[in-house]
Image (cartoon, rainbow, N blue to C red; front, side, top):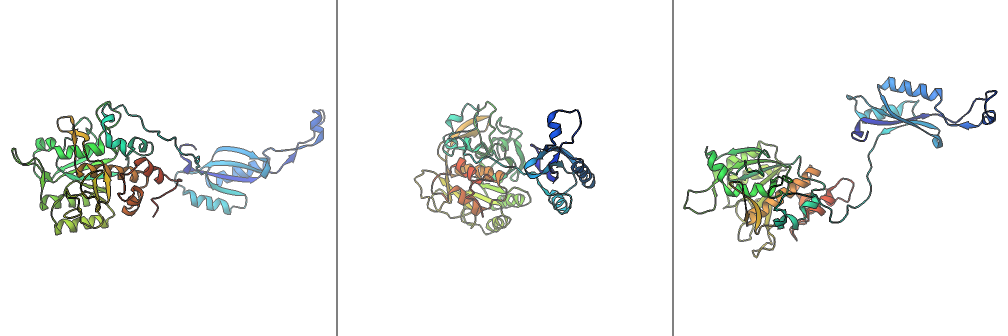
Amino acid sequence: MQANSERFVVVTVANPLKPVPNRAGTSLPGYGGRARYTQGDQAAQTLHAIAQDYRLKEAAAWPIPALGVHCVVFEIPLEAERDQLVAQLSRDARVQLAQALQDFSMHATPTAGAEVSYNDPYLSLQSGFAAMKTAQAHRWSTGKGAHIAVIDTGAQTEHPELRGRIHSAENLVDADRFRFEQDRHGTEVLGIIAAAGNNRQGIVGIAPDARISLYKACWYQPAPAAALARCNTFTLAKALAAVMASDARILNLSLGGPNDPLLAELLAKLLKQERIVVAAQPAAGMRNGFPANVPGVITVGVADASTVKAEATLQAPGRDVLTLAPGGRYDFASGSSMAAAHISGLIALLQALAPGMDRQAIEKTLGHGATMPDAALALEATLPGTRRVAER
């Protein structure tokens, strides 16, 4: 009953007080004929008949003298629909009360400052992780059940912090697996979102238990070309189409460029499917170009950055963020790409608790970018049975 209350119902039947039978030679109280509460034959027979008629199995029973009833918790058949069964029992003339076995919780606020304890040695260097109170938020969610699609460069999916944690990885640029694993930007983004926790190595991701799908649509030019990765309409269109065929509800786009009608149309279709799209704010601080200017996209700027943030939806850590690097290493990275990854991870924490949250509810919960989101406060507000700032 404690583990799976959904399979149990509560039933009461009449069982009034009856006098104890007088028997000669018994103790003095026996001669008094005092009424006491016992399970009478009638109640026993009634409950037995109910159990047979509805194929119920008794799990617990106790008398309630104040109501003159006997109460039983029945386990219902596996194939039975509980609400329908309760309705049938309520119409049964033999039954005084029938209801579902329900769960309740204490109306208490968790101790301030309580958080998940991690043994990862570089956790103290994750200033953004701490600033968003992520360890406290992990009391309630680590992203399990949420699915994030990341369109980026390749990444070292065999990094000790990512090994076995990436659901799928597709190369939409070429067939070079070695170069895929050497790509830096995607490794940095995935590290912020999904690095393993409590493995005695390195760092902890914002949503370490989220399911991650990586689509390589961007690449680095051969040395000595510029260090920034590049993408194009073709590779990005292929990646967006691939995401559309998946069940990922969160899409991270830590990239940007000019207006692009084809890509804007594809992204608009994803948004109509109620996907949550997170994009990095352009370097100038304006909400222009693809994907930041597509209506419905959550743009993320760097918290405390000197660039204009007025047009960003949210702010997040993006300066000297400790994350993963190819070769099984760790390094610091900066930019709105890193800020977007923080928000994608945070949204995964929210959706793991409330899968139906839409963009408007998420933005309301996270504060519309006025300040850096407080992950612990956002998740506490989303918990079932507490105040819900995220209600539609």
